[in-house]
Length: 240
Image (cartoon, rainbow, N blue to C red):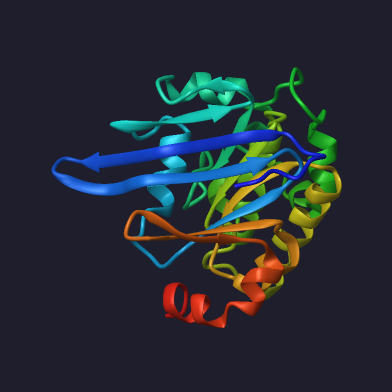
């Protein structure tokens, strides 16, 4: 795939294959994220999206292929080291600390060495709901508020690349709009993002590039204009 001349590669996944026991989950997966781009990984449930993200983060191990982040190979590194290098991860299901307050969740991951200097007050400006609930325990938040907190917690690591798995899954429409507003703000700040989500129309409005995965293989890639015109692709690989 050709990079735009003005941009450099932030993440490149090459020939990635992953097995769970005797089951092949990913086969020869290749995708990339340029600096300041928003890139999606699309596909129906069970096609390998979460496994791809977990492998990038070092939470699952590949048996073949390479993962290059910021010009360094990371596929043999432990997950904590990958996070330290500048990848913020918002996992499916949020996984915030339920017995810590909103504020404690945020300051637990605070770093200032990398990228945009995100601090607690900036997270509250991005998500005013969190400011109103900063003394509430994580378990006391709604699903949408927990997702805001999970994104805020990842941003507090000041990531070069932000990865979101099912960014708006299970959220009410108004809360989904809040998440998309946040992502638009991050795009304006040139934050590199790799995102998994099922809301194709919203993704088409914000993303620069899309990869579609089916049965562990990338079967299509292109920009938003190309995907909008590819009704056959959407119906074949994404329609329920």
